[in-house]
Image (cartoon, rainbow, N blue to C red):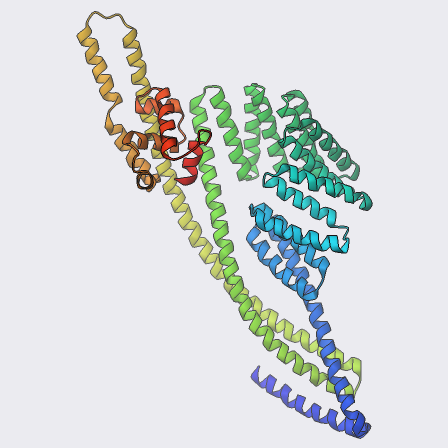
Length: 573
């Protein structure tokens, strides 16, 4: 490479000398400097044109990659590519490209739950589009409305959906109208304004059928089903769900079909038709397992657990709830791993870009030198021949750089794959250990609960017996009480609980030193999501006493009466 550069520089010096002599021979002293100035101006102009073309190509590549990662829910990677695309759009001073990037950045941040950034990006896009009277302003209004609705501000969301529909009258974008109608329906349903919700869902459905937009059609049918279900019009809701079912079968969309079967199950459950509800929930579970739809599989377990609990089949309810919790933890860990891998990818990408930047600087130096060289040849021969050779030379250098980049990428990919494998092995081992500890803890709690339940039942039966031998009865009562209040069961439970939640008691006692041993026990049972009845049995007290203890604990935690102690405990400890 060094020899090649030396050779090019040598030729460059010779051709500068030839150009100067050529100018001396052809032009007078007053015009030869103007001739040389024109030659070098042509070089820099053409170099800028090539640079602009490269930036446009790079923007398109980043835009495409950003959409791919966004659709795969790899939001951090999508953000990396769109942030780079934004810098290029600003460099090109292309407001169309700039607002397009702001739009996607806003949507991605909304998907991540980062509403502050989402609002910022959408408002930047809206300001530019309002100033330039861009027809895509209506799309920005819909996206902003979705961010408001997702963040819980339904009325603000409705305001922007209506703005979209109003300005879209000029553009007559039916797909955008259908999109806005559907989101209006959802917002009104959440606000329990069912008449308006139904009106806009029907409009969305009609428009979707007209323009043959299957996704919006399915969403609208589902929306109408949910509206009917919330109004306890179960038969009507099932009619809409049946239409979604037929569309999903026709389109072979197994994700929609799985969700649809769960809607059926929830509908029958609310109507207390438990057998039908179980049938549809099991079908949904079967599909979710078959097509590896883990989130839908988790939801199916939850529905089945609730259904069996409603029918007092606690064993089955417990089994499905255990599966639900296990899968929920697995999905959480997978998401965590995914974030770690995305951060690793971002770090590796930045390192690679630093190396590429250095290569780009060297390449630009070489390009300028080669261009001047071929420009000299072009002046001595033909302009087109000179440009053709310059173009071919640039292509050769680009291929060399691409080959180097490919080889480096392969090396980086191998390192990343090795790291991913190690992380996966460690996570699998951790998940197995945590699952075993969770099973031990659940088994211990269930054993204590069942023992106390049986002893309480025996005690109630003995109290109702008319026995003359008072001494014998007292002896039995004493033995039952001793078994109910036995601390050994708590010690075993506490040992397993600390394995799963090691800092629980320590943090509580540090932050709230006035908590009693009884209150700490009660809080550990609440942390396991046990009911008041189960907690009362575990502590050998009445359910009312549990409620009183909850009230006293809330006061110690400075919580309001309406605050949910269970939720607060899960979020903070």
